[in-house]
Image 1: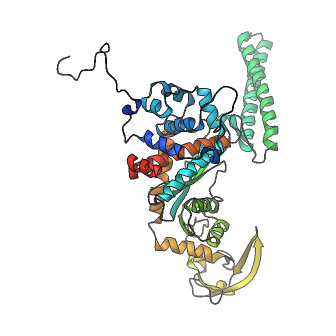
Image 2 (image 1 turned 90 degrees about the horizontal axis):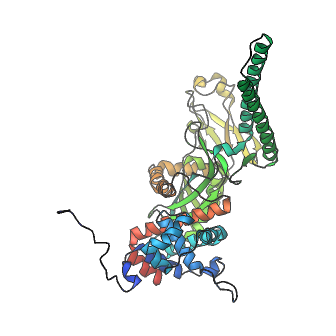
Length: 481
């Protein structure tokens, strides 16, 4: 093996460093994890077992278990069985836990039983980031992303899915019955049908009837559920559409608010609602509380556009920038859209592209919204009517708080780069975390446990971000201060 880098002889005696601490360098991330957890008030965060019982077998301190899990998610080792193995062979983890090696059941139970404390730990690190002035600019981007649950699509049932499955079974039974009738006719004409084929067809029909009974039992649960969905493996998971055509997953919709300066996840929430339309105000308020700001600038995509949500943000001092979705077919059909009509606030009228004035004619209430209607009787003789409306006259509807929506649009017009900032800010954390989690995403079932798992992922992401910004030594010194 000349001219190759050669390893050490396995039988050669070696003088290892006398102290375990010598194996871990000063800029190793585990040192930051150790200092961070030691500085937490675990009892105040909700961890139980901080004060040991006077009798019974001694247990592991919550600080040790928390360090173990943070290390696992920092190094893409979320499995309790894999963490158990790493405790016996990974020098960094041996240093972090002091040579302790809990069994996988103890490790798994800690995550299962401490959902809310783990979320509070994630919030505690965001508070530290705020003290380090990493969140000094009150500007965030909000987005949601779908994460797969531990529930196959075949084990999720909706009303439409149930109807399609029962229809397919009925078609299969009809096909098999037709084949049996053909076999009976052949037997009546003196031609013997293979007995094995007849038996196989009868078995298939019997199994399909059993499947119908199973589906009917599930259908009873389906009709009784509020969401009209039933998931067998994870009861809290829901079928959600994704951006691809005719695609979807069974999982959770994770909402995140990310700082636009250092891309730290300020707030997050795990939901099983497939759309983002009702999440804007809540996520923005959560982010404002976390960074302790009186005013907040928020940028989001068009999936969050909801007039009531925007009004709630405006009233609470949160400035929102997002595009309005185009729901009207007028532009697609080559006609004027509502944007071509100019509102004159002083006179409370609209001015159409032809220069005609549309006064307010009536006020209605629809779905709790107070709406004003504007139109003119001059449409019948207007030379531009074909470009405006196929109806007798063009009517324009204005919400009583339409000025809020106009402010949102004006902000976007004045800052066209806002959507690029949003995309580069909030989509990167989602992609990174999904890469860490792997193809299966969540390992736990039910929303509380999934929320705990997501909190650990977010905490690990934020730790890595801050270590990349400040460095491990500066972060460790700041945590000790």
